[in-house]
Length: 338
Image (cartoon, rainbow, N blue to C red; front, side):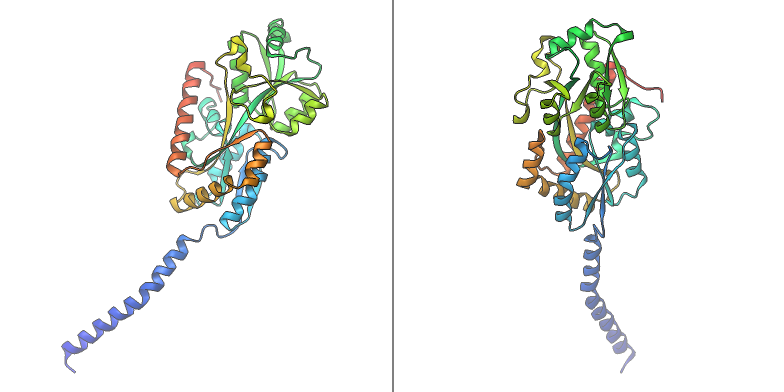
């Protein structure tokens, strides 16, 4: 056989070997792309167990895990207005092994108002909004008020040294800033008492240690209201769910006609998480939000369930929220020294 023939044969053998390996290479590449999730996934909830955020997590974690084909483990980590939990997510790898259940209360307000917080809102990327939670004005049972007008009148009769006290999940939280803004709009003083989560606020409100609180509504409050543990005065939104239809909107009071707020929750990942991982989470969460049993449970607790959306739409919605609160902070001038 000539040298040229040998070279030709070798070339053909190499080409055949390369072609034979191509399907295997493609299979390995596909398997790598489908590796997420390779094990249990953590859902980080920035508040202790028992509150409304935790309830949403418990409702959604199972269906999301079923769609992902992996166990989703709810991890509760309260404190510092949710920034401890947020920071833990940011300190983890950007691989989808942990994702964050957050609102403007942890993702947007703390980094924009507290110089001690070491991340900015764009350190997270939105995967899918999940719910709109309505906020309610609750007062202790012994406070001699039954309407928003009564409440504002009583608050106006107090000076700063004897002002009504209110509890929230932390300094710089959505509920803290809303209540401070309420005081400015109504021109009445309030005294803030921060807590590490929703459950202890409810406990002290029921015990009479604080006068009132603006809080995210949850259905478990209804029995406490019925039994006289505390009173519900108003809802901070006009588009109320059926379970809150019996309560007036705070904006029905002429002095607070434009006072409307709600809490928008969603799932987020650390910036830089691979697109394939975000797409897998987006698909699984979106599928869970279309589950009739999930919708029924979330709506029964007074939430509106968010529509399924693309990653691009989720990112755009998050950008709008950031811009909204940047403007609010600019107008109020609220910033902590850190």
